[in-house]
Image 1 (cartoon, rainbow, N blue to C red):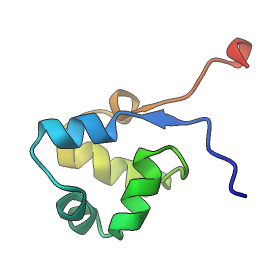
Image 2 (image 1 turned 45 degrees about the vertical axis):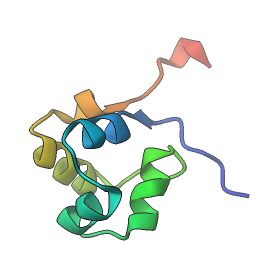
Image 3 (image 1 turned 135 degrees about the vertical axis):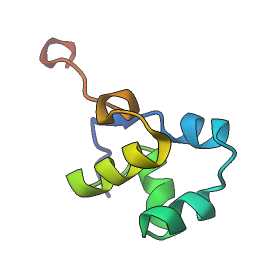
Image 4 (image 1 turned 90 degrees about the vertical axis):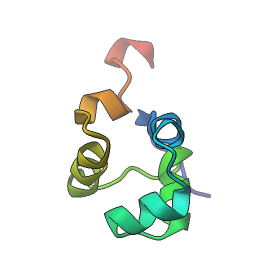
Length: 74
């Protein structure tokens, strides 16, 4: 069983707001649709390079797309 990552993201909401399908976004960043689905569902954390690619597609900072909980909220 794969342990979900603690990193959360707003990719789905931002992608839908931009009018992009999962397939379109996946193609733009060079991953499969299945990989994008796993990232959107926080089942997989993207590499730093992929996080930068995603942020550039939407013109947002990485910290605007991805969140990591504070240490005291564990």
